[in-house]
Length: 633
Ligand code: MSP
Image (cartoon, rainbow, N blue to C red; front, top):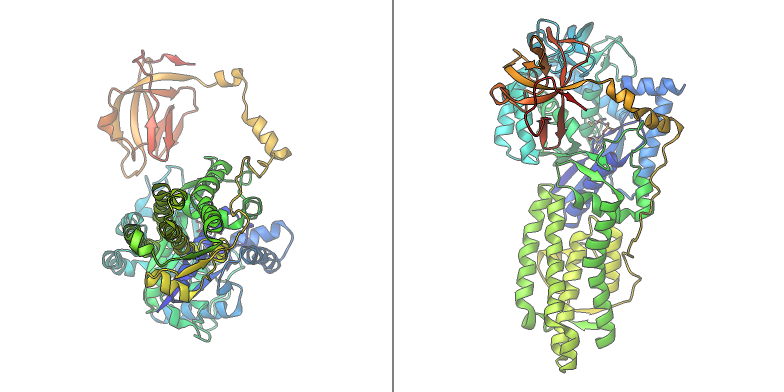
């Protein structure tokens, strides 16, 4: 039985941040989880080093792309080593064997007729960074997504026949229910493929930092599109196209990816594999994005979370627990010191750490640190059954990458232990002379702690070893088999005092980064005076007509009465949230002195105010009806 787990390979145009750490720590926990259960596990991570972005980043710093890639790749590797990430291989797309494998794959696809040479004549929307086929453009010119004009880019290119695989891909999604995890994300992929797949341009001539085409094709102008090169890392790392030494690990069981790169993994990658006649990966497990105190992280805001700083301040394993517990897998999450401190003080400190302290204390006070489990079943079969019932639910949760649920459920067994102490009060039993009952209760809780340590081990490897050493057992395959798989109890415990595992944190341990000069300037620049505010004329308007803009996914065309001699025409990107009939007669706030602009060929003479959060978009409206044209101040 094997498991093959991968992280995305990280671009070397930037240093590691919390998003990278998140994917890598999930993958690491999964790898450790499967290893403990006896799977022959292979865990791959690495860096993605080709492409225009990297070429430009290197140029900016006056370095060759390879030198620059060497430096940043080493930073990723160093961080993962400091984090004790248990990867089996760290691949770099500049590795010779990788390049060989990519060229081999290209050759196979080419010889099969799945790659052909043509001219790329695409309408490119700079704002959306996407090409659109003519058939999707509005008025032969405007971007169907944002309505801005597109520019024509023409270059010679090799194409992959993605269109050929449309039906096979849809079949794959239909047959493999859990191909995309969480399942809810699959519909997005299906909709995209059902919308029609265009052949994919897979070479570039506009830059040179990429894998050259195979010698047999002999076309030195071209280098490979970075995503073809990058995705193939998952098989070249196993020796595809070179020594094939580890190919028995293929297909991957879990490709962990962020939601922004789902399409590449769930559409392009399986199509490439179909062309290469290789089996499909089992799961594309897709996580959401981290924000910082509710805001998107960006260098210019200076709010990017550095994982090393967090781990140094709060402890690596506490950070690992937080990342996995805080956010349901697949959803976006917010990083704040407060949320992290709450998890450490409550879940780890109160529920787990205190429980261990109580057991250490009571076992010392009443039984000189020696606890026998012989009477646990006699007095606590009910609690044991409840614990085993919960444990039985845990593995399938990890199989679906639902780590947050896994930890939530696991904590239920700690609740059983904490409740048992309060219900059976061993100190009272001791007073009543019922030593056997007190001993059985302490043994029940010690067993629950031992099982928790075994189950939590993949997420908190060192902390759980400390728990195990306090209880006097080892965490390894054998004890996992006995005490989890075979549901046995530890026969006895020789308990040891250890320092508290989760000292209470009273105050944030990291200084919120002070903005640097540039960021400060930006912040003051963001403040405006009242006079500046009054430059914007906002007025109440009543929507008198509303219709869809043909062929646009986002835009509605509205006529809005602002109390002037004729209604204003406003093109608003709200179609995903409102249908035209919902809007008739509604009052909205309109920015009335905005320069008119053309969107998809229609004049727009104002802008409607709306608020958007993760639950959707809502137009802003006065609480009571107001005469059209009333100024908003
Ligand atoms: N090189 C490609 C992947 C190729 S895999 C064949 C790439 N690299 S990346 O460095 O830009 O991103 C790597 C991963 O980091 C992605 O899965 C992305 O979703 C994740 N994250 C980047 N920022 C993130 C957050 N703020 N939060 C969570 N994850 C985010 O894409």
